[in-house]
Length: 173
Figure 1: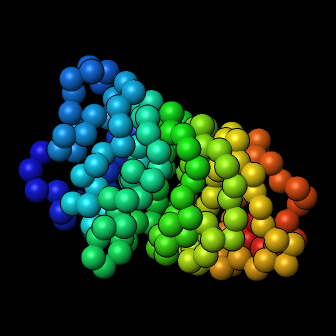
Figure 2: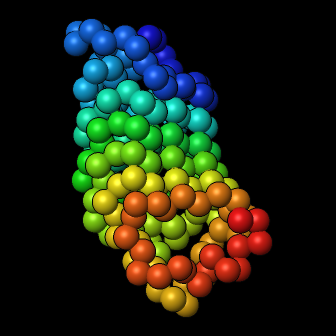
Figure 3: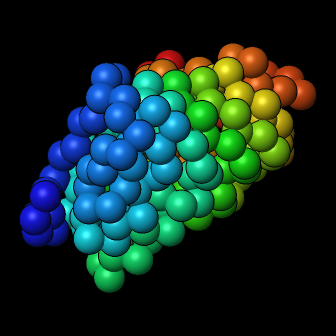
């Protein structure tokens, strides 16, 4: 595919190409049970990444490792990996994606705990969907989130001990 370092948007959602030998984004397989691209470190100008509904296997760590290797951080504002076969826990370094506005992690096989560290620098967050995963949302009752203009949060089918107090102070919900 050539030099992709200036690429800003990728939308490979609902990829219908199901050949096992297909290779996209360098050497990464994306369709029919493929893995998360390991060449993400070449995409440091990426602002939108949509890999939804592709049956991608692996862990979110693989994707975040590549993006976090960018020297100046990543300008990523929208990440959509919903409806895949991703598993494992959601890494705390997700909280370092300070430019993220839209975060779709729903309908995968994520498990484990989500806590304040996962959201630590997400000051620009507008939309969060972590539904339909086996996640335990472990936020202290006195936690004040860094995002103040969120308008949509979906945590359905996650384990919440109670409705979070911080949700009452979100005026855009």
